[in-house]
Image 1 (cartoon, rainbow, N blue to C red):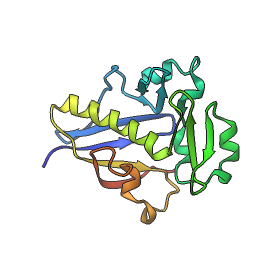
Image 2: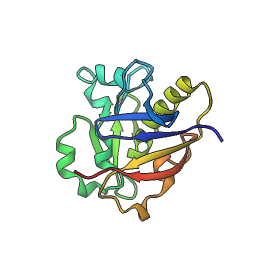
Image 3: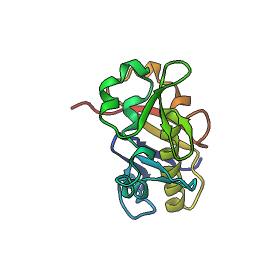
Image 4: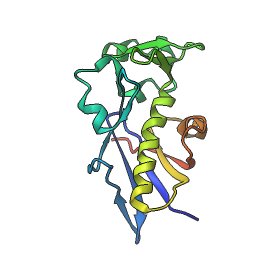
Length: 175
């Protein structure tokens, strides 16, 4: 069995770690940091950026830069009125009235799960680069107030768009 990574998919930053010699080791990102900003950006020329590179250009490309996407995950559009006021990008109602984001640069809509999948994919790639092997399993944290019995692993891996099976969802500690 290959290595199982641990991912904390955070609202502001995310982190990936692995157990080595009985100790957890935080894996550095391709940019050299221990934390990966939970930010995804799209440029007018079709480029997609994730992490630090996306965060760096957020001021000049705010309507195409998505941050704090976890605030919208699994929520209906009418439930996120206050959260919509806190972000510079457009949040719209999806076909089933779920919250989605609209990206003017490519004229596409994305679910929070799709944006999260882009962050998960980057963390997985960084882990594979560090480990020198493919990674297929992960323990992924979910918010502390989540009913763990209702967590659908497909949501955490976003309908298979990231080749990563959830070994076990794990609740965040609540402080």
